[in-house]
Length: 150
Image 1 (cartoon, rainbow, N blue to C red):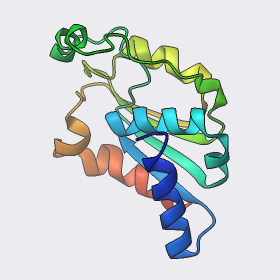
Image 2 (image 1 turned 90 degrees about the horizontal axis):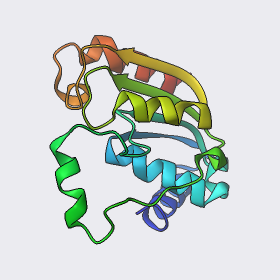
Image 3 (image 1 turned 90 degrees about the vertical axis):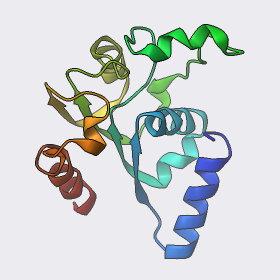
Image 4 (image 1 turned 135 degrees about the horizontal axis):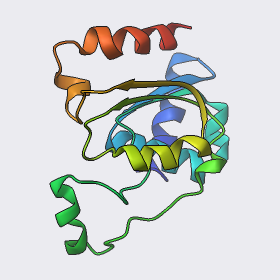
């Protein structure tokens, strides 16, 4: 997805809309794909003016989620690492303090590698709260919308 799908989607959207650049909003695996795409293909930075990462997963070294039990069963139990310092696009991070998949330690590892323009932490949010919490419009979506409209 990072190598072919994201560049194709961005090309399609910019061609159809006539816009030269756009914002990319990813949630969970969508952030992983976005990080990989931008690290592998530096030309994408010309099209993505802002990357909004909700519950960002840049690595899974410290996850406490049950997903960790599935990793040994995959063909690659250690996911590939990308040089995230190659991601030049400004990134807005939205994270939860109780997230067992986008673990706090992994996010602390992630932050210094990126051009972070906003870092929002909601201490009591878990991984699903970004899409399911009743207060997500106040805690997340209002700021997200402001960033997209800026």
